[in-house]
Structures are given as structure tokens and as C-alpha cells.
Image 1 (cartoon, helix red, strand yellow):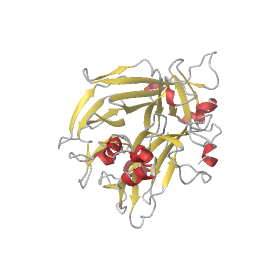
Image 2 (cartoon, helix red, strand yellow):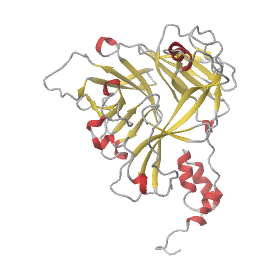
Image 3 (cartoon, one colour):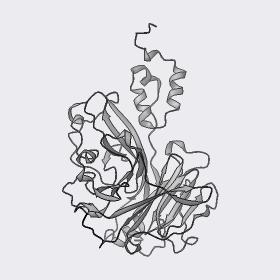
Image 4 (cartoon, one colour):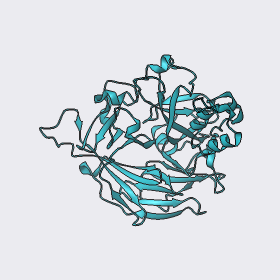
Length: 402
């Protein structure tokens, strides 16, 4: 082949093509690989979709708030956050979106930081040519939702039943659906105001941790390096080994004093990035604190970030995030490199908070703010138009560039 001629990709040996496919980590990467040419598309099978996994309901049959006539199951749902941008169009603008597939196969677009489905997107193209767009999977998250079976009992669900029996605060899983190994598949959830429960594939009921961990209220759970981790509101961190038949529980880090005004309004998040586990503590500083230098759009919402040190079994506080951005959402949080998002700087956290409600926008990011580690101040995301466009509105090139 002449050095100036273009390679004929369709003639790539099949064994080399399969080797390339085997090292790709995400489903979207495999779909993009298949889109290169007809030969590759016919040679590579479609990557499998996540199966519908049904979990037992209820978690606690003895809960006094449970309606005994209510029947159904929990469904474990997988969602993906993607960054999307056109390849041959300037100026480039990245769009961040979360996608969830329903039981019927329909695709649901959601706010990347929240659980809400997006409305008013009928103008978007029904099909995307993956050769025209750079699509990157940013994160993967899981939700557990209740699916009613049979005729719903009367009266409908009360608030107490919703909070203590049906609503699941957070979910962690032991592996991806497509990478279930011989040790099975285990799900850890936070339910009923901060209690822990485990389910192993094949079990007919949940294993609750209430008797062992009585009195503790948990804020967040994560799976990292073969173990589950859970952190309580008082800072106590435990690990649970899903490979053990009895779910061995160990204390990883002791309780620590809470930060913030009155030690209330403090929230903890466990987030894994690569092989490291991080603890993010969000708290509201003294609500009555104010200085003349404060801007009316400044909020005293503070953050501390810690990294797990496995050798000493404790959290080590970090001095910011440098060239990294953390997106802290409702049951879905993830780190990204700042260089991958134009107009964004590193060393910051994008997060949700009720103080940002009513910012004048009803799209994704309308209840979000940005905390800057450099000055220690939180501000509305809407104050930074170039940054808020990462969420909303949908970019114009999706309307006509397809």
C-alpha cells in the first residue's frame, strides 16, 4: 500500500478486529466501533443490553407502615451519563446527558445530576450517527424502583409507606450486569431513612443489617476493590465483603466530628474513581455568618474531600481537586478531567442543593451550584452561562447536524 493512500479499514483481519473489541470497556465504544463500516458491523455482534433484574419486595415484611395488600417487586435499573459533541463542527460545545432504558426498550433522557426525566425534547433526532459525534460514557449508575403488580390497594401509597418501604435512597452493585462472575451479583441499598440491606442473586429475600448495625444511620454506599463500603452520618465507615456467605462486616474508619452549622445539614458521599475511594463531606456553614465582602450570589455551602488510605484504614483529607471536576448528584456522582470540558476549570464541585431552587430555569442544572476550592465559595451554576450550557438547553447542532 502506498504511504499516501488511505487505509482500507474493511480489510482489517477479523482476529485483530475482535482483539480491539475485547479491550473496549463500554457498550457505546463497541457501537462506535461497529459504525466504522459495513464489514465491521456485520462481523461484530451487537453488545448485549442490560437484563431486567427483579428484586424481592418488600425489604422488611414486618414494617408497620407497609400495606399488606400491596404486591410487586423492585426493579434494578441501569443508567449511563454521556458527554456528546460533534466531531466536525466549531465551536464545539459538549452536552452532558443521562440515559436510561425502560422495560419496553424506550430511551429516557434524564437530568445528569438528578432522577428527573427531561421533557420538551421532541425536536431531537431519533437516531444518532456515531461517526458524526464523539460520544463518551462518563459514568454508570443504578436505581431501584418499585413495580406494582395487580390492582393497587386503596387508599394509595401514604407518605410513611413511601419513605420506609418503597423509596430507595442509594444503590451499589458488586459488578456490571455484563461482568457477573462466579461469585454472583450482590446489591447493597440504603432504605427506610438510612438502614442497610443486601441482596444476593438467587436469594428470595433481603438480608438486613439492622440487628448488627443497630442505631446507625447511613448516608452513602459504594463498591470498590471487591468490597462494599458504607458511611454513617457520624462518619463511621464500614466495609462488607460480598464474597463471604455471612457478609463479613468490618469497621474501616472511626466516627469523626461533623462540620457545619449546628452539626446538622451535613451530607456525606462515597465516590469511586479508578481504584480509589473518596469521601465528600458537604455542609452548610453558620447560616448567620456574613461579611461585607460577600456577594448576594455567594452561598456558604462548604465541602471537604478525603481519600481512603488502605494502609492506615482511615480517611486522609485532600487539598482540593487540582485539574479535576466532581459532579455530585442524586444517587449518581462522578469525577472528570477538566480538560475534557471546555469552559470548565478544575478544582471544583458541581452539586445540587435546595438553596438553588427557583433560579429561573426549569431545565437540568437549575438546582445546581459550583463550589470553588480556591476561594471556598459556592455559587449558582446559572451565574456561569458557559458552564450551565453543559446541561441545558440542548445544543443547536442536535437539531440539524445529524
